[in-house]
Each structure stands twice: as C-alpha cells, then as structure tokens.
Picture (cartoon, one colour):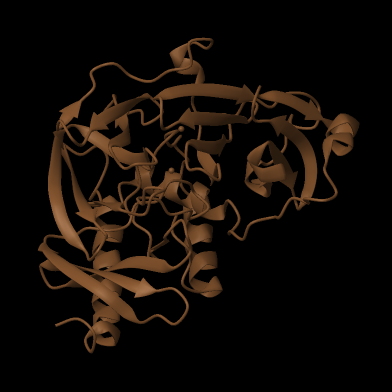
Length: 343
C-alpha cells in the first residue's frame, strides 16, 4: 500500500496532454512501480533538523546531510552507482528515514517494470554518514517503511510481470540480513482486497504507524495502517456516499489530538475522522462532531493527483528507461550547483 513534482507547469501540462492520449494502465498499491521513484527534494529528518538528498556525479551518487535551517552541509558520503531517496506516495511524500533518525535507506531506481533485482543502500546517519550495508534482492521490490529503530525494512514485493497491482508487503530484518518469507496482511481482509494507488501518507508521532491513503483501484478509498514496530497491517475502509465517485487525489490525511485522531480531508474540509486506537470511522456530521477545535487538522502541502495518472500511463507506454535517463540528466545539471560542496 508509495511522483515526481513537475519542474514547470508548462512541462507538466504538455506531458499530461500526451499522457491522456494513451491507454491508461493500473499502477500498483503500497509501492511505486515508477520509472522515476526517488525524491528530487530529499527527505527531512523526523526531528526537523536535517535534510538528506542525493546528487549524481557521473557513475557515483553523493549523499549529503544538510542542516535544515540554513542548508549547510554537515556530512557527506558517496558510493558507486545511482541511488535516490525513496518515495512512498504519489503526492511526492518522501521516505527512507527511521524515526530515531539513525538509519537512512536509499534505493536504486528502476529503469522499467518489472526489474529482475532490487538494490537498497543502508546508511548510518550519526555521528556522520556511513554506508552500513547493501541489500540486493532477486525480484521487484520498492521501499515502504522502516521500523522506528531502523531494524526492520518494509518492502513491497511485486508478484506479476504484467500486473503491478499484485503485490505483498514483506519485512527484511536488517540485523540478520533476512527477508521474511511470510507477507504482512490484514487477517480480516482477503489479500487481493488491498489494491490501488497510494495517494498520500502520514506517520504517527512516535513513528510506529504509517497511514497511507489509497484510491481503492476504482472502488472505495481506504487507509492502510502499517504497524512498523510489530509488523502488522490493517485496512480501514472509507465507504458511503461521501466517497462514492469522488476523486481520491483531492483527499489528504492529517493527524490531530496528538495522533489519537486522523482526519480525512477533501479540498481542506474534513469528510471523515478515524479513531486511531480502534480504527473506528465517522463520516459526515458525526465526523464534524468529532473534531477537536483545540487541535485543528492541518492540510499538508502536496501536489494534486495529476502525476499519479501520468506515472501509470508512462508505465503502460514503456517509458521507464527514457524517464530514468531524463532524471539522470536533471541530476547532472544539479551537479554544477553542488560542485563547491561535493569533491
């Protein structure tokens, strides 16, 4: 149950017009089977003090740690190959950092779908950036989440070479270098019920829970609640007239009341609330009554769902390699700006 921001409105409009002329294929849930799946803007540490980003330097990737308040580089590391900060939702939400701030995961972006092998680079961030291990897996995976202590890596394993909606969530033990053969599923739901595109994500204040809103693959949207501490998953269905026929990409999630309540917002207005202790859902007037005026929900920044549609179309059209090369070219242009801070 994890796009790329347009670099200009003109470019985005041109690609959208071209994309809409092509047949649309269904993209995957709980992951990013995208030609470009790394965040160009990096990822912010949970405490908000540091930002991590990657820069391509020829055949190597430079990983930079910046002080968030002024952009000063505090640490850097490099490795052979092309890696990036992973995305976790189609609104460009970035992931890869554990809640304790000590583990950072990079992914080698795909050149197409499916890929035969998937590679992750695991870094320690404190007291300075250092490559801890490289994880190479046979098959097509994407990054989903990390446990709060950075010991468990949650992955999306794509099972079909032609249908990216067929997937399972898997756990990789970074201490034992072991992929758990058992997938993580909601015991209350048939496994195939968890399909769709990941629209947006929020995490609980302690980093234990990753809540991802999915479009439901043409049905009703739902929230995938992943317990990253205990390796459990639950699906929270969003049903009823308020959600039938609605554009899920106009919706966002916001936590309130210290994480005890999660609000589903559409165009900034609450349409449902979820009690995170029980996953009970209230909609309409009941949702409004549940709102705590002392802790109003905040509509997080993020682009519309346009790029989700574009990304799915590009997969179907086979443009993975082309966009990957374009991403490398964009990174190369940023190299000049980073040259004075990266040897």
